Image (cartoon, rainbow, N blue to C red; front, side, top):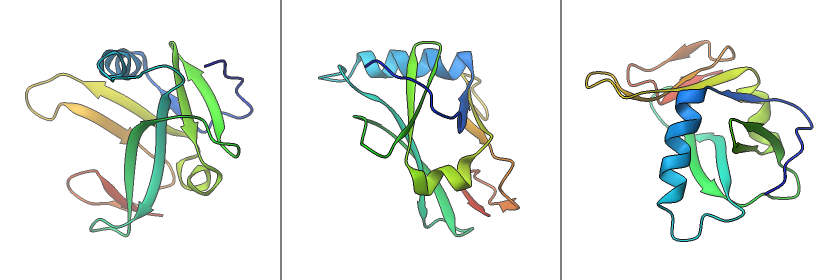
Length: 115
């Protein structure tokens, strides 16, 4: 997928990009897919983060980090502007972590937040 960043909404660290590339390679049809990052209602704080592999849509804001295209819809962009997605393979507390400057509070699990 050829992406041109019109605006950077979410920043992906190199460890996160490497993990996503590994996961994407395991997909049955990885061509033309990027990492969609979005928010939806739910979780214990009101909004929750979601990530999935998806194809670009017409209204997406697309950025590329270390060979991974990150897709964010216009609704989610307002909640995610300036967020950093990182990855740790630590046995305790490992996995994807999102640091979001727009989150006024978040739950203990780190998967939901209040804007």
